[in-house]
Amino acid sequence: MAPRTAIAKIWDEHLVDDDLIFCDLHLVQEVSSPQAFDELRLGGHGVRRPDRTIATADHSVPTADRGLPIVDDMARLQVAALERNVEEFEIPMRPYRSLGQGIVHVIGPDLGLTQPGMTIMCGDSHTSTHGAFGALAFGIGTSEVGHVLATQCLVQKEQPTIRVNFVGRRGFGVTAKDLVLAMIGQIGTAGATGHFVEYAGEAIRGLSMEGRMTVCNMTVEAGARAGLVAADDTTFAYLEGRPCVPDDWDAAVARWRRYVTDEGATFDREIDVDVEAIVPRVTWGTNPGQSIAITDVVPEPQSDGDVRALQYMGLEAGTPIAGVPVERVFIGSCTNGRIEDLEAAAEVMRGRRVKEGVRVLVVPGSMAVKAIAEERGLADVFIDAGAEWRDAGCSMCVGMNEDILAPGERCASTSNRNFEGRQGRLGRTHLMSPAMAAAAAVTGTIADVRELAA
Image (cartoon, rainbow, N blue to C red):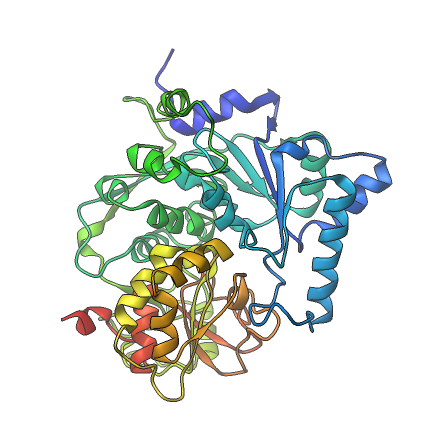
């Protein structure tokens, strides 16, 4: 047999028929599922494989006091509808007011549900996160959610492939977030459109699973359909002992080791990213491709889109990005709401105070992550510094409930999108790593975290 990529191996194993693939794990949340459940009722269908389905509420849930009713009407209705639907169709759920609740892309890895060689689907674009485990993971639309619920299969054409090689070693202060922002800046937000991506290279292998999840999470911001890092010993060490991993652990690992790209396998495209040229990055505009090094100045506009972005962000070309004041800081999301992310932010904030006039929200990606952070004393670090310590949810990443920016407010954010209005009408979002966001919190400006560590 000819050499094959890891992506091809997973695809071939799951191909049921032409352009029809089997879904190993279907993740369901409250925003993209109500219409899908209605479709089941209208068609007289049940859920084909409840045992391969798990639900949680994450987008709409408030992250403040859970003992209170949900005030936002839309959020309350969405959560209530999910609870009714999963009860009717007998789908396992991590309830809103439970220790198992969290962002769907955080609880999958938390529980060990996300495993190498799987196909994973969810009605959320950042399902690509799960590719960090050597899985092929897709975000799907609402009608597709209904199709997967009813059949456990997805109509999906095989996509061309790209291998992104991160060449060289990371420098001081450079994180997974900086790697992926640099890649998107290099190829553009449409640079991988319609492709499956495999990430490779020494810098990728050197990342923790949290770091790999950050990279794969933002694959879709380059237009790709899915992103993957082949499983290795780092993957297996992360998964070992988690609740939902196979009982025959050694046999599972032996099987998972097969999902690697064979020597000599070819991709439709290869892209190299010079890691040693990367320093901590921050976005200046209104898409994730508009990022620069923290040492750079806001660039001259090269298109009408750039002009609009500068106007929206209230920035002028030639302005050093370091020193731009911020009013808000958000540390969380399915991109950077894991325990390692919180540890990185806490390390910067320990012994320091949030700058007067800056409001900081720290939102764990799951209630399990929150419990670990509290056990390790990280929550105390944030609270002592003057940040707000919240419950798990998507929060400011999608601008839900009270977790929104006021018009004109500027936010240093660890989330994945900086589109116009993403965090609130006329809000201005700068994407960066957790450590960089923490530096912004204590200085009141977009700042080079390396200077605080000096």
